[in-house]
Image: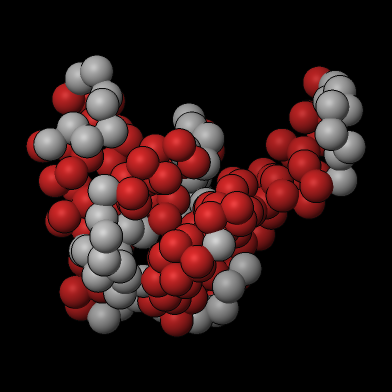
Length: 171
């Protein structure tokens, strides 16, 4: 996926929504991870300036192990998931906006991370309404999850059809 995004960026083949930083892929990091707030916070604390680009973040995560991951595999996965969730390059407007407020509003970092993750992770974006409709501590039944997954499946199929017809529209 990252290679495809980089190729689109290099060739100019990305849609308007992709150039803003939205991720049109069918899956998402949330098939396997959380929004990785602790990792994002620790990573951004390593860089004083907001102009670091993806290669610097990648080097800090994988080669320098600044996040203290136990293995090379977990460092590579962490880099891939953080890149997919946040972009990790100020050339991506969503990440640039995250950085702008990250340093200015430390108490709002969880919300900022969630907003960026929702924009970039299709599965999280599709499940946001369901999650926000639940009260804190409210139990979620298997039937609730089944209904959510059914809706997500329909929405994903619909979005693929629409994206093919209108590639510059966010679905």
